[in-house]
Image (tube, rainbow, N blue to C red; front, side):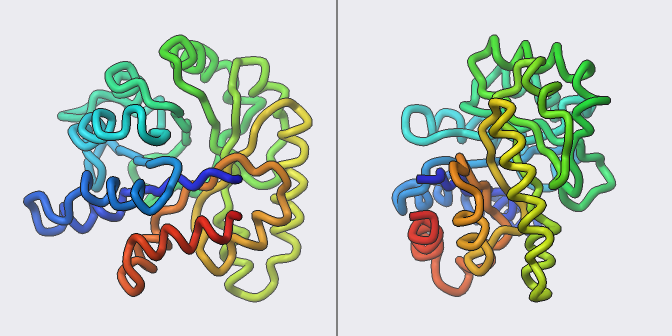
Length: 247
């Protein structure tokens, strides 16, 4: 079955908006785990807008030996203040997976993937270090991405397909073209020897269609929609609904 990794960034956004410790990141993670999810995702950013480095460390201790731990981020974002940098965090906590994303400070959320042909050599030493730490390495890629052989050549094991355009098209009632593009991209990545993850704006409404269309989908990372749905139906119910879709 495709692994469900729950992104907890939005829990941290709510906590940070008020200060203090509520809602509690650890309690949210435990609730998701007890509901059956197979992983937890966080995406710390240098501006500390949501998940903070201390959250990354706390969750590492909590999750070890229980579920997969996926940390996302831009490996080229320089350390500042309390943010030590993505690779430094990975050295500290040794997550199951590190998903490299080319986002910038000005982006509200990730909105594009790497250009594999042009970015591979810059990424090569970072991928090598992460592999030496025992982390699985995934790269965020656009639907329609090319050059998966470059990712394989530098030691990347997975790609995460950016599903934002598919989700937008699905909401507008014309997802066919974007779905076909996702399917073709996933197929070419798999043929190159990469496993395929997917994430961004996936929801209970659109996940099933994508899951059926992409055989062998390894993992979906879902946060924004799941946390929003949990406000109405509860966190445990929301997680279990996603798991049922993935089955």
